[in-house]
Image (cartoon, rainbow, N blue to C red; front, top):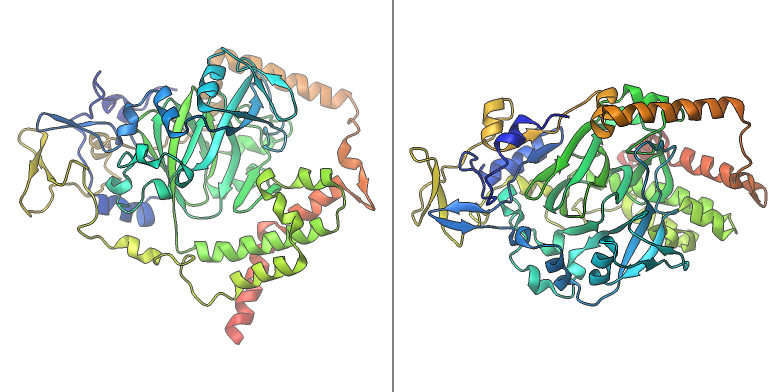
Length: 496
């Protein structure tokens, strides 16, 4: 796929200083737009890169200047827990994702992880299997940065203020570190929206609007609170098992260091590292999250109640994500109390946080380009920034998404939308595409010629097979069921 025009024009010079042609946008305007106007994924290209101001090099995200080894000082000799998966061949056809339940688990220090990723050492997984980076990838994902022991190393190195969220920092950010091939299965986050900063390496995002859910085979198995998964095996999906994919229009973008991606509420996304990669994100709460929390409590009640009738540990491990195993240990009283607390909550605030409506209010606390405490003015005559100690208004620009030239000048790009055929060509390449299509045909012939294999899913725990359990969980947690229950609850509450 050809490199987008905005990407080419805003890639910066060899010293990776931000292009002077790219103007800062008023952070208040960005914040309002993200909450109110932007309905599709949006990329701010190179927005975190150092900026030349009055002859000085300044950077709000100083961690962009770190190499891979420098990140190790955040963790020291501490053992980190990695999810380890199998690398796929270029012509592989995946009938399902690499679920976390099927991935291996490994423990390494950050230093050993780097040596492992470079092929200098092997790693022994929790089950004793020896793996190397030639055949496997490793992902240290979903790590809350507030749990860092050496937070001082990141002081003032993360600044979401340029997007209108000056109060957000390490305490509100999550880190994702992995080798090439590391990925997150395609899913929807039911809460909030997402800002993702790419600080090292390249990472590809494949996104779909919620309106295309019917083509993506949604499921709540493996169950994870606030996540709805797709059963499609990206990045090389099987069209035999998921023929409806041809009707989708994937939105595809590759993030590079300094880029920031905005993911709107409830957009499907599959994420894959194209090389050693580090990303940092922050989730932004929305007013709709209150209602979604009630729905998620209903789902947890359904799943937890069904798990109470299962004695097999293998069954439970098959239907719950590893981080949700505690649901199987919750008592009926626990589940009821959690559900009631969400349904009958009197306070509509977001778990004690300031009402999201405050996010639409701007104040002097909103940070502009973080260059000491000086205000920045854009000099149109010289096309450069200059500092000012006066209290005059910022010459920063409001958003004009419909103007292509404006977007290019500001390094802003709507994530390109592709046909599914164009997606296959852009991700696999024309040469690999032909091999991929041969593999699909081979699978189709096998499916027609060979009888289905006996699967463990037909084993029974009492009178319930694993397959039956999965059907019940997926049915009782289906959006249509949960939405209907929520509607009835709301009607009952209004009458009292």
